[in-house]
Length: 115
Length: 111
Image 1 (tube, rainbow over the protein chains, first blue to last red):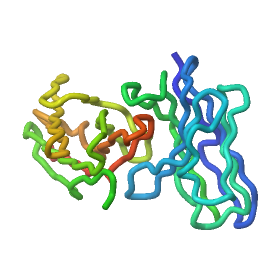
Image 2 (image 1 turned 90 degrees about the horizontal axis):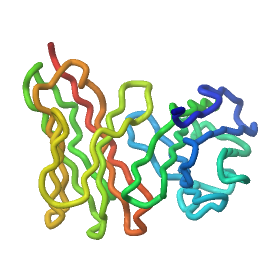
Image 3 (image 1 turned 120 degrees about the vertical axis):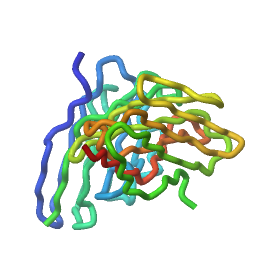
Image 4 (image 1 turned 90 degrees about the vertical axis):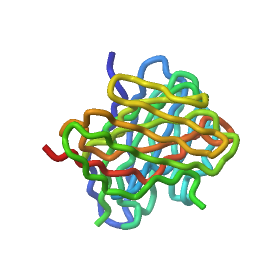
């Protein structure tokens, strides 16, 4: 079946602009995660959804970052007033149950570059 | 202290040799542990999961978990050039849904 799909694959934006990153999880996966990965680092947790609700948004760096999952499937990560430090690969992952026994399946990521 | 730490690498091994990767974690109640492989420019791909103490083998890969020492390792036997990648160790935290990742160890297999 189809894997996790993320669009766009690359996004270049100017400092101060608003961007939206989209994630379409594996069908039937109730848990959805957003991670951010900088060069030479492991993925860093941003937010976790179980169904439609954000069960844990403790990893969002500040209030410029926001994510939604209105129908419990597709999710959008929104970044306002982008800064150069936001440049990274944004990874979305989904899993069946959201508990430790359910491995995460990652999408190919969106590479965000803020100029 | 980081939640998950890996030996920094890079690790270079000749083809056919064993590559040994190590990882320690700080949360004593972590329950689930994973090894992901990440090729350059690609997303992480799950290669092994381990939940109980001891060894778990899957083809050329063996994961080892020691919860008392808070240590998990990955052995790659008969290393192949296609194994050249960054290997990420991950552990769930107390809440059991959030994965924390190490920084990764880059492995290069020399033909």
